[in-house]
Length: 247
Image (cartoon, rainbow, N blue to C red):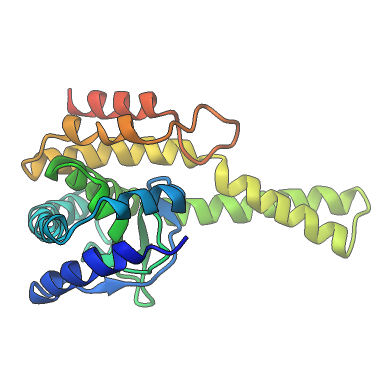
């Protein structure tokens, strides 16, 4: 579904304001982050966007980033000495992007925190946006990309080795390795999300935002439930993780 109204009314005003504040735009894929929602949901958000709300969303993004970024970098240096803590917080303006935020790294290893345009339009207040950005920063601080890579490789090796001992070869061996990699990438996914929720809640709080109110974002998000090998935990568990972190 084409996000025509979103492109017309939100992307250009947002990018115009962000360009004035020297906030770059990202086009990287999303290896970690809040659970993407469907294009239909993104389109629904687009249909409610006006130029006025676009300007408000742009101002919100710039304001929240200016407060969260220094706190996230300070937290990163304190919790993960030696890690690159120079966050690059950007807008993902791909026209087909869903309501999403994610963390990745550039070719030089600099951590990138990206928020899609539909997500910027979707959040209802500064607290929600601050919590979302802080959550993505926490993924980097907790080294979730590296930990997931290690888990993926280890599981692929275990499955391939077991298959080889059983006499598998060629395509069957490759299938076993790919199955192991898929399982390895998911086995700790829920734990990573809850850990990022907890660390992110503290970052948002220390930046002066109400992380409990920010976590109310989950009340409007589809609940993934407690699915086996799901990538995200139930929403109630995430809200509880935030509450415990702030006690």
